[in-house]
Amino acid sequence: MASNTALRSAANLVRSSQSFITKSSSGSRSFHSTGIKRGGHHEPEYMHAKHMYNLDKISNRGLKMSLAVFTGFSIGVAVPVYAVIFQQKKTASG
Image 1 (cartoon, rainbow, N blue to C red):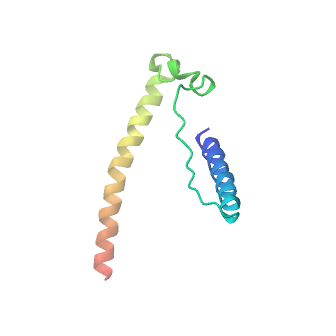
Image 2 (cartoon, rainbow, N blue to C red):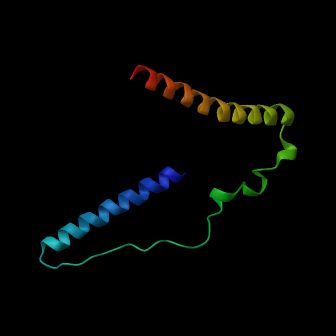
C-alpha cells in the first residue's frame, strides 16, 4: 500500500515538473511546490487496526511466540558473533 502511494506521488511529481518545464520555457519563471496532504486516515487502510495485535486470539500462540522470541534472540546473537569473526579474519589476512 505504501509503495503504491509512493508511486502515485512520484508520478504526480514528474507531471508537475513537466508542466513547470513547459511553463518556464514560455518565458515566465515561477517556483511551484505542492503542499503536504494532512488530514484523517482512510477507512480501508486501517479497517483491521483494532484487532491487529490481539494476541489472545492467535492460534498456536505458545508455539508462534516462542518461535518469534527464539528467532529474535538468535539474530541478536548471531550477527555480532559473525561480525567479530569476519573482522578477525580480515585483520589476520591483511
